[in-house]
Structures are given as C-alpha cells and as structure tokens.
Length: 212
Image 1 (cartoon, rainbow, N blue to C red):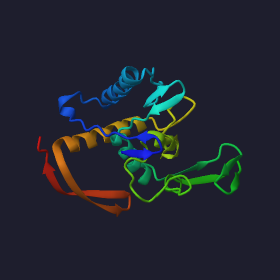
Image 2 (cartoon, rainbow, N blue to C red):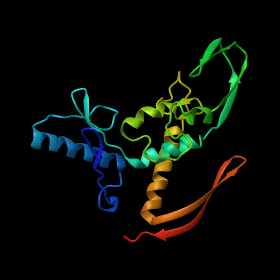
Image 3 (tube, rainbow, N blue to C red):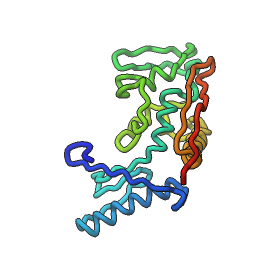
C-alpha cells in the first residue's frame, strides 16, 4: 500500500497472546526488524532516536512506526477532554493569542478556558469533529501538543516548576490497557454513546467473545 510519493506502508498483524504483552517491547521489535532489513538488504546503517518512535538514518527519518492503540486513546481525549474547562486569576499581565487576534489580560483578572475550543480547532485538526483513530500515528505525533490536560499539553511532563497533571500518564496507560483487554476478550462489540451533564455515557449493546 502506497501512502504518498515514495512511501510504502505495511500493517503487521500480531496476536499478542503468542508474544509479550508489552506494547513498547513489540514496537521496539518492529523497529529492530526495519533496521536489520535496511542493514542486510541495502547496507544502510539505521538507528533509533531516544524518546521517539521510528527509525532514522542520521537525522532523516526513514521509517515511521505507530501503534494505533495509543493514537485511539489520544483521539478520545481530544474529542472529549478529561477536563473540559477551568478558570483562575492571572498572576501577571499577559497576552493570549489566537490565530487572528491577541487579547491583553491584566494581573488579577479572571480567565476561563474551554478546552474543546482548542482540541477541536479546525485550524489545527483536519475533520475536527470526527473520530480519526490514526490521527496521532507517525507525523501525527506532532499534534499531541494540542491535546490538553488540566495544566498544559500532552507533550509536557510534570515538574516542580511545571504543574502539569501528575496523573495524566497513568490515565493514558489505564485507557490503553482497557482497550487491549477489550480486544483480548472480544472479537467485536457495539456501544451507544450519549451526552450527559458531566460528559458522556457509554452503554455496551452487544459483545462477541474472542474466537482464539
């Protein structure tokens, strides 16, 4: 399957019951396969870059490897942010900029932020109101800075100076494990989603048990 000029896409389908259940390990194994093929077939020496997925030759990325599972979780968080809105008083004078305007905020003034204005911004996201499961795969990882938590974007980490949500990584991990468990137990399932005052409700309407 060709994704674009000169790009070939491969979708390996693995039954994790016969391998390790560690998704990070499986991702590393796929990277290793790509590096070995490049070395043995084309005499190209490739490597990994710390903290990033994929395979590089020097500073050039030659293979993007994405796990749809993680992207699915991030897409859920984008469409329905865990904290939809928050407010606080400005600790200093600042300028808040949008795509086409700038707003001056004085120290002590109250600010209210509504996250879906950002996470469904059509200037940032293609088809912002649609669920696109592979939105954050490969080059789509760059969009994670627009997936927001209570005190900042997904690509930031909590520190003493950065009061990012301390539990955000645990939330993503738990959500990924839930998706894995669903597909280990069931071949397919159907749900109904409805809006409720505090967010959404999900009702499972049918389940088909795993055949293997």
